[in-house]
Length: 376
Image (cartoon, rainbow, N blue to C red; front, side):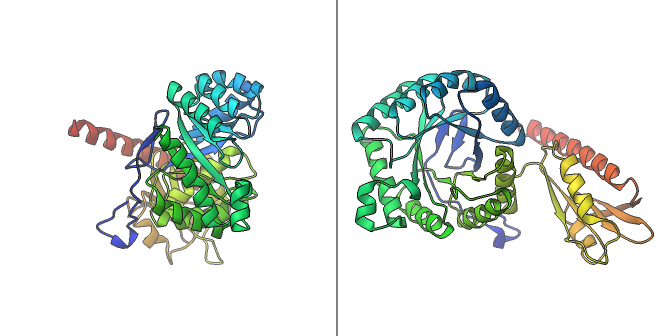
């Protein structure tokens, strides 16, 4: 991301190879993709498909499903057929599940070097991936490193995780397989960050970022934002997953918010709001909560400022598509494209702002379409 007007906002992304997870490019100059993982029983195809569809509606570019048994891979064909986004099959222990998943149409196979089995078994998985056009993810995890690496290093550490990943990369490359990405996840932010920085120097493979087992919705989002935000700011990362003990849709929302905060992806309404204080001219907290819910359907990238008083309100509104700043006597000022436009009473304010945002979204899309047609 380059900003020539404000160079202090520049992020120089690490140069990586581009691969494809189904129709989604990962790495190179592709946008950083956001993914999640279902938590339904995969063999329950109906429930899993419903969750995949909900995640796709929330903006997921890729969805991963766990395939722990034959019943899961048997359901995969229907899940893949009904999914609007590429499906990644998550494989542990049983290499035959990977072969079955490839045959069922998975776009990518995630395998864990620590438990997938012998090189011979991995070669069988590679053949299946080649035969069926799958990419692969080498999913190194601090909690399941190979025994010989734990004996060598004494504990999970960045060097052990990188060695695990590079050994597996060599195995794939020796078998002439190059459509792979890699992750080196840990639940410890320091360990994960150090491992990712090291692997980023050691390979040009696309990197899948994540702080694994990050925790609850609130705590896990904070931990992921710190760990992944640090790496993304440094230009490291090509696809991300926020791991939360929560509805997978919340992982997608958190992932986009992390990327939006760094200017790396733009989707939906970015609400800029104050924490509120005694100066507020209306109930900022309740207003923002309702606006977030009522504007979820807007996918057009745009900005909305909701500020309680005139201390920072006009200045914030200068930089947003739509703005509202609290004033006195039960009314505030509406800003459009950074300029004062009209006064609006607090009563009916939320309905009015929703209407303005929806209209502005239509305008933005029309302007974008016109620019695209002019360029063709």
